[in-house]
Every structure is written in structure tokens, then in C-alpha cells.
Amino acid sequence: MSFPTSVNSQITDAVTQSNVKVLAEAPAMALGSVYQSMAHSMGILFQNAVSAQQQQNTLAQAAANQGVMQIYSMNTMAGAAATEKVSQGGIADNLTGLLTVLNSFGNRPGQ
Image (cartoon, rainbow, N blue to C red):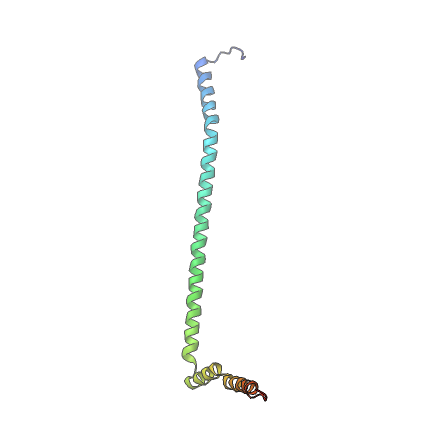
């Protein structure tokens, strides 16, 4: 119990009520600060995601452009010869070998 002082009781009540008000608002203020920092962090996260998508799009466009430039800079006859070599590489030899093996099984004596 406090000792009686020469300060008016209304003044002490006002000071006490304002102190209680500050203490009562502290959790709400802290939670509001947490919400603000979370919102700020989410904003930065989305900004980084958009930036990464833009950079990936730029890289994809550059790669496609480089491929088209290589296709157009290739000599036509060299391209045709290379395509023929790739598409028919060793097929005739493989088919001839397979036919030889099959003929050897089909022409066995005693059948």
C-alpha cells in the first residue's frame, strides 16, 4: 500500500491508467511489427522470383537465337552431307550382315 502523498489522486489514477494502457497494447504492437516484417519478407521473395524468371527468359531467348544463328550460318551442302551421314551411318552394312546370318541358318544341310 502506498503512502499518502501531496499529489492529487486523480493524477496518480491517470498515470496508472496510461501505464496499464501501454502494457495492454504491447502484445498487439509486437504482433503488428511481426506481420509487417513478414509482409516485407514475402514482398522481397516475390521480387526475387520475378527477377529469376526474367533472367531465365532472357537466357532461353539467347540460346534460341544462338541456335538459329548456327543453323543459318551452316553451308547447305555440308549440312546435307552431314545429315545423310548421320541418318544412314552403317545401316547398309548392318542389313547385309543380318541377311548373311539369316541365310546361313536357312540353308543348313539336313532340313
